[in-house]
Image (cartoon, rainbow, N blue to C red; front, side, top):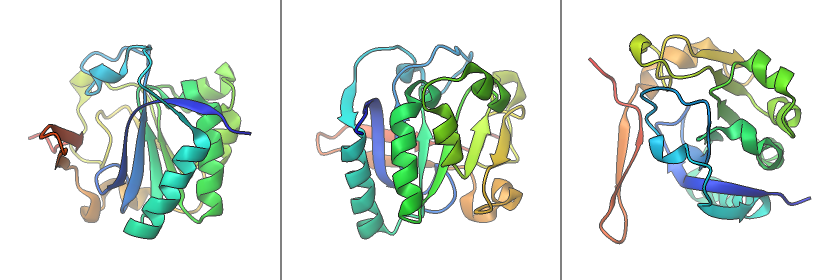
Length: 193
């Protein structure tokens, strides 16, 4: 069954949104309201790009063939609010041998209690979940990909272990892209001194 997503942004190949080269997908909409959120433009529940899960799956297959990505990363906004479609994508990714990393502003136990449609299936097809709201007063300068010290890594499969959190290969960084129209696009998280 094909579901649809409200997508804010996607990048077919990035090296700063999880371990190795990854396809990254940001969904639109979040009401957790973390002060200092680095993705303020992704918070409003407004229509951005409505795309079918099957179209995203096809993009990921192309990214795998062209860029030899090792996985996908779901970010936001809040991915849990679009878990049903993301679960379809995550299941397809794992069948292709790709890893799945999920960032959520909810705690893992909150996600399970809230029982949002598709969350259980999304979690069952995720290798790593990084949970918890961003807390500006607790910046994390040690671990990769997280913004604040309260955020936790959960390893839901044997694909990765805690060594990825501090791996020198994946130190915090920012990627800059120049779009065809000359606009600069940024993603990633800089190491803050």
